[in-house]
Length: 323
Image (cartoon, rainbow, N blue to C red; front, side):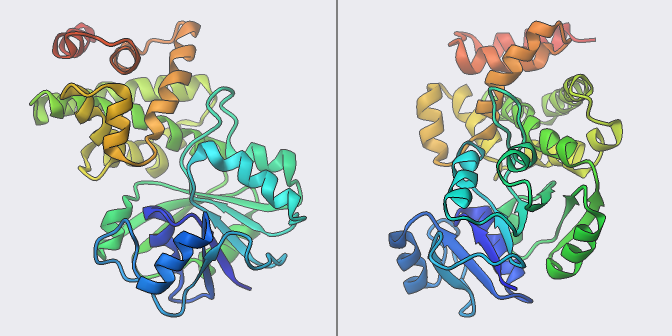
């Protein structure tokens, strides 16, 4: 059995190193040029002073074969997920263990990775990994806890042993779709905290945003039939709070740039990585048509997409109107 991690960004690279302490790990990159750089330098091009172990194989995706007993951990932007799943089909890989470590859904339909895999690769064993896991903290040797979810209890027991390592520990759940939706939705609240940070506000306003944001997060999750236990679990509230308070959060960083006067496009360029909350904002905007009470989230979508002239007034007016 080998463990393949697809995606050589921060999260994929960190997971590959963590899992390599007990497993034969292959890190798959998007192309051979990137693989060659990592093989030659034995370090991540994105994470400072993060060394790649000598026992880890680094190669372009689909260079080696996938066997039925192999575990494939996918850590790529969610917008690329269906494309990758179709590549598995093209290569006739229909039976393996698929662990989704990406946080996001197909935004026009809210289809989760689990649902997409079930459509195209029904024989694959599926698990989802999410939670309050900032990659840079784990890269620095700091601990974290994630949640592994699967409909298949025996798969969870198998993964518990295989994915065990010194830094990243796990809870377990059978609510796969709920955990995927929760992980995708929390980014908007972190953008709001980033906006308040960029405006020069501090913890008084951060606390308001996280509190009201959690209320609205729960409203949306209930509308999507996500259980309360998942909403207030580590993949829900835990990940939301972590994303809001971490200065390494790309969603928060994006919001800060918006408040400093950058356009939507320029703020995304400054972040330089996928900002899941922006894509989700488009979907949330559509959900507001169902008469959901989400004034803070609606305010943030206006700031992102409508070119609000006075962001400070827009945010404070919204916060002061909530009771």
